[in-house]
Amino acid sequence: MNKIKVRALILRAVRFEERHQIVTLLTESHGILTALAHNSIQSRRFAGALETLVASECQLTIRDNSDMVRLDDALLLRSFENVRKDFERLSTASLMSEFVVRLSPPAQISLELFKLLSNALAILDEQPQGDDAFTMKVINVFFARILQWSGHQPLFKECFVCQKRITQVETPRILCSIPLAAWSCLECHIENRKEISRIAFEDLIVSLGFSLKQALRLLQGSNDHHKELFEFLKGVCFFHIPGFDQKPFSSLRFVEEFNLRVSSIPPRA
Figure 1: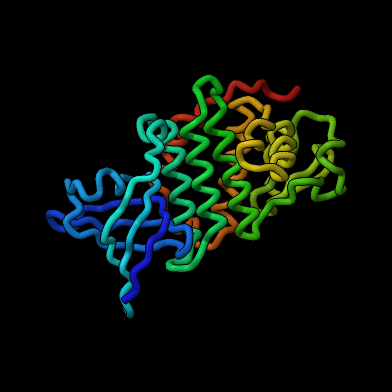
Figure 2: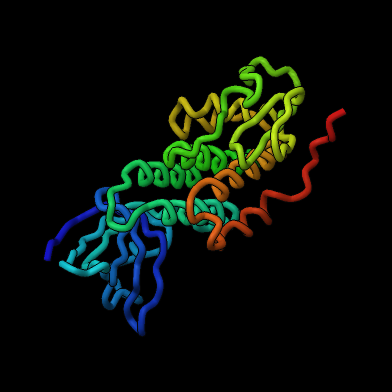
């Protein structure tokens, strides 16, 4: 047996029998782990450290020839209280955590995913109310970085057909194709095309060169623009990342109920 201490995000905690829990952890140093927490139901020993979507320092025992570790103790580091008490932010955080669970190989280091989800939760927790497009912006930047990390990044910078850079496009709309994971000018032909806002797409390209927090400050499109961008990025994830289309994401419908209502963008003349 090997005893370790790790920082972890609690992604899921399920009651097991009467007093125990099975906890899914995204750890900084060991990737996704499934842990059995004995006598953790209503235990003062854990004191909120096993609540869903909190950051905790966990003491674990890794046993040879076992896929499940033992969670011996946990200390709450950050509760992300504003995320957990606001349904819109909680739905957003839950969707991002589901994506990370699908992407992370069990018991393999996923430091970049750990940092991405940690930073996204911190931003959701700290952002004051007032920007109605805020959660859509967070999701879109998160999706774009997930695609970048997984090697399925769309052709963001230039037209799929004529290679014109998006900064040279003068129309407010561009054509996007989920199967091609690319966009084109309105003048160029592209398969399975659908019009979306150029503004949000252009801002997203710029944002990929900055930290997550800085990137969100650069996204200037409206909530309606980012709804359209979300549909494209979500479609690319499900179409191109293996296994994403096989099992529904339980939190996705809550995000859509909040953010994907009828758009007020006027049709292009």
